[in-house]
Image (cartoon, rainbow, N blue to C red; front, side):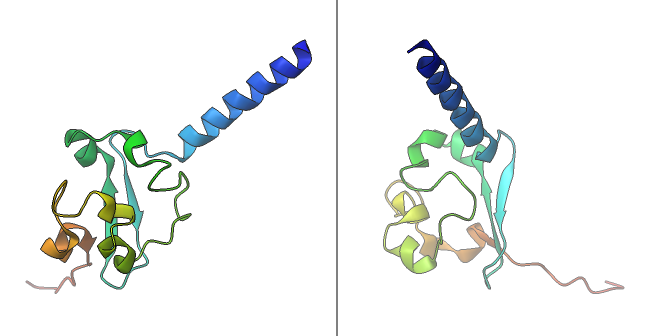
Length: 112
């Protein structure tokens, strides 16, 4: 019985560390680069400054592992993923301006 309790405790601690390793630490960002509109940069500090906690979105809205959710603008407009809060009531609507989230690389012209 005692060995089972110790094993359960060890597993619980290991799972807690795995979840922490996948999270975005304070002051860091996550970049999503695959979109044709340019990369999207998630800044946890901006969201924390707005009064949000990680547990407000994880794991209810987003899975804990980067890349586990296939996020599309169609889903966001339908109120899923980022659209859960970015709906014009709690936070700005995605239609407010693409450049708030999407960042395209600018071409550098030599000599200018």
